[in-house]
Length: 412
Image (cartoon, rainbow, N blue to C red):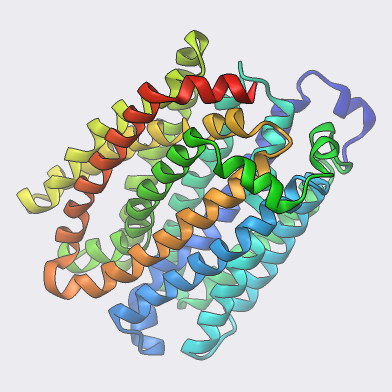
C-alpha cells in the first residue's frame, strides 16, 4: 500500500503504470518461457508435437474459463490486492512446476498457472483506466502492454540459455523466485483500497454487467477482432522457437532468443508507438481508434506470406519484424476502445470476457497448429494466418463505418 503522500502525487498514475509494466513482464515471461524448452521436454518427458500443442492449450483454456469471474472480481474488489495476490500465486506455481516429474503433472501445473494468472490482466487494465483519462489512457496501456512483449523476449531467451546449460527445470524455478521478489516490492506501490469505479460497479451482478456488454454491437466487434488476432498471436508464441530450431537449424539458445525476441521486441516497439499514435488519432474522436486498427492489421497480414514464398532466413525475419510491429500497434487500440464502450465500472468484466474468448480460440489454434504441422509444416500454418487477419481488418472497418460512433455516444 503506498504512502498517502505518494498516492497524492501527480506522478502516481505513471508509477502505477510502471509497476504494472514490471508485473506484466514477469507474467508473460512465465506463461511463454516453456516454449523455448520444447526440445528438452520431448527428450526428457517424451512429448510429441500434438502433446506440446496440448501443453499450450491447457494453459490457455484454464486461463480462458477463469477469466470472466476474474474480470468480475476486478470490478468488485480491490484491484491492487488482486494484482499482488495473483502475482504471488502464479510465481509460486511457476517455481513448483520445475519440480514435476511426469507429463500429467506438468499439464496440471500449466492448468493451475492459467487459473491464477487470469486474475491479473483484467484488474491491471481496469486500474489503468481508473487512473488515466482518454488523453493518456492508450499511452499508459502501451506501457503495460510493453511489459508483455519484454516478458516474452526475456522469458524465452533466459529459458533457452539456462535450459541448455542446466536443463528445463532451472529456468522455471528462477522465474518463479523472481516473481515472488517482485510481489514483495509492488505491494508497497499499488493502491490497496477499492477505487471509485469499483464502488460504482459493486452492485451490479455478473449476468447484468455481461449482458449490457454483449448487447453492445461495437463491443462484439472489438471482442471478435481480439479473437482473430489471438489465434495468430498464440500460434507464434508456442511454435516459433520450434520452427527456428527445426527449419533453420538454430541452437536451443538461439531459437529461444529469436523465437521470442523477433516477435516480442518489434511488437513492443509497435505497442509503444501505437499507444501514442492512438491517443493522437483519438483527439478527432474515439471512434478513429478502430479505423487505425483496421488499417494496421490490413498492412500486417501479407507479411506472413513470406513463410511460403522463401526459405531465406533474413527475409523471413524481416517480414516477422514488420508484421509484429504493425500488429502490435493495431492491438493497442483494442483496450482503450473496450474501456470506452464498457465504462470504468465494467472495464475489468469486459477484459475478462474478451480474455475468455481470446484464449479459448488461441488454445484451439495452438492445438490445431500441432496437428496440422505434419501435413502443412509450420510455414504453411503461419502463412495461413494471412486470411484470418484480412477478415479481421474488414470486420473492424465495417464496425467503424456502421455503428461505432452511435455506441460510443450511448456509453458516454
